[in-house]
Length: 304
Image (cartoon, rainbow, N blue to C red; front, side, top):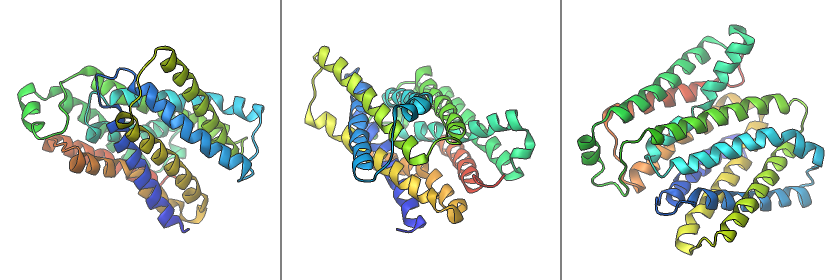
């Protein structure tokens, strides 16, 4: 399959992961929905890891698992926080914030390597992403309750103004950025396929630990509530698979990266169509600013 279609699949699957994870975690009455979501992703990733090892022939060892463990934990903790955050804020707002981690990685690169490691377009993109995310948080928190209630009247879910609603996606962004930066360092010594399997096996372990906790607490599982979680887990795993092979075509990375990085824009579209989310023009303006920056960062991902 060509890099283009793999990129489109990664974009669709990861936006689908956002959407189905939202459906699986939005119920505030289920205080452990984030743990159930970790279980779902862990089990699905564990199955894929088994396929990669026993059918794909990917080599894995305790040394690889241990070397990649810090990166895996950063990614897993960020996702768990993101799942909690989905209870308190629209998907249309949380997804662009969470997907801004690339800008933070660029900032860390600037701080450690100087301007020589980044071009003018990337520098401008970092500014756009930071301005969009900060502006989005400011608009969200400054919106008065009457205006919020008016625009949420037709939405499937209503949300009250909350500092936690903005904090959790921001924490996701910070941890994911740390994971991405650590990833770039660890992958200098590890094979990418082995590292990905190590990540999936660590997620499986986290999922089994969460499952044990839920069973000890005698938490209830219902098909209606769990179905979207497993659909989200399937989308997350499939998106990761498509992403790896899309970027493996190094001749077209400059074109595949921006396509994939725009998946948060598709998440906004799913939120608007299926969740009936309606934001103010100020929200959409800040989202547009951030998404433009994200796409530019993706476009110049391989250009120093």
